[in-house]
Structure formats: C-alpha cells, structure tokens
Length: 113
Length: 123
Image (cartoon, rainbow over all chains, first blue to last red; front, side, top):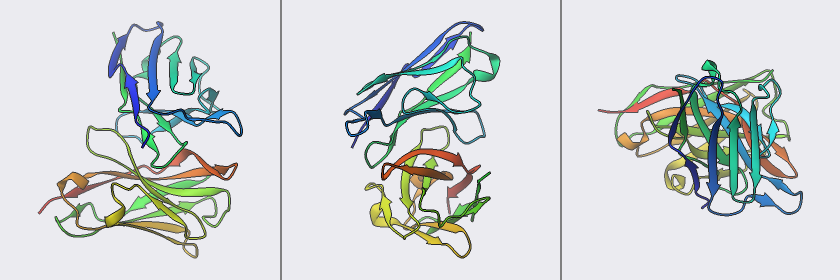
C-alpha cells in the first residue's frame, strides 16, 4: 500500500502570510506513460465534505482562488497558500490515486495566528 | 451539475450489517466515464477509501474491508449501495459517496462528494 504522510499536522499562520503543507508518498505516484503525478489536494471545513482544490499535483480546479498552488513530483509534494485568508481555515488532505487502495494523508489543520 | 446524496440508518447495532445508498442526480450512473466510490471518516479523524463500482458492476474494495464489504449498482434507479457486515464501534464514521472520473483507463480524483451521513455503531 502507498502511505501518504503530511507535515506538519497543524500550523498557525497570520492573515496575509504564506502557509506551506508538505505531503510525501511512500512510493512514486508519477505515471510514466503520461508523465502525470496522481496526487490531489482537498480542503475540508467542519461539517462539510472535502472540496477539490488541486489535481495532477499542480492543476488548480476551476473556481479555486489562485492563492492556492500545488507543486512537486514523484514522492514529494507541496500545497502553498500564498496569502492566507480567514476563509482558508480548514483541514487539508493530500491523496494518491495512482494505485489501489487509494490513500489519504492524515490531514493538516490550518489556523489563524 | 451532478449531485450525490447518501441515505440509510444512522444507528446500527454491533455485529449487524450497515447498509447505505447513494442517489445520483443530474447525471447518469451508467456513463462509461466515471467510477462510483464510498469513503468514510471516523469522527475527528482522517479519510479512508472504502471501494468503488463501475457501471458494468466491476468493483474494487479496500483489502482492509474486503471480507465484510459489498458494493452494488442499480442503473435503473441511478443509485449505488454499500453493505458492510459484522460492524463494530470502529466502523462508526461519516460515510461519503463520491464520483471519480476515468482518464487513460484509470481512476482520478473524487469530485463531487455527497454531504455525508453519520453512521453510529452502538447497542
């Protein structure tokens, strides 16, 4: 199974400052046939289902603010919120869809400092 | 716009079977372009993928649950269902259904998700 590990578990960032979340997979999720990383980021607010933010590791979903960006390849990935807004307080999850069983990171809680 | 809605009992006794249905609206569950998934989240914890079904009836289950799990599809009702047997308190969770698109003959990300339904296992 592919194990997804996020760091940190939580972070507190001042409004307008940068937030960076890391995600590491225990095996590469880069599919050589199409050169795509099978890695997605979700945002989850209390009482809501996860919301799609970034897919293919770096493609922003339509309607997602451009302060959210994803980067990385192979086994190491990063979600960056360039200028934290109050509405970004949430738990963020990475997930691999490279191989079954599809697996999620443990989540990173982002709060306002 | 496709929407998914979970339904089923909110309370199940230990050792019994948990049964949930996901109703899909705004799109056909018979489409060749999608996989239909179940995902769960214990209270205050992370997400666990349970399994998927394709319109042909092909399924893939998380090995951690495979011995207790059945996912089925009813294209006439535009629904798919989950049955999890021999439940314990560890199966208490919010259960989500979600769609995943099929690209290059492979599954992709989960979107959209249903709102989720809390199932509590307790006597």
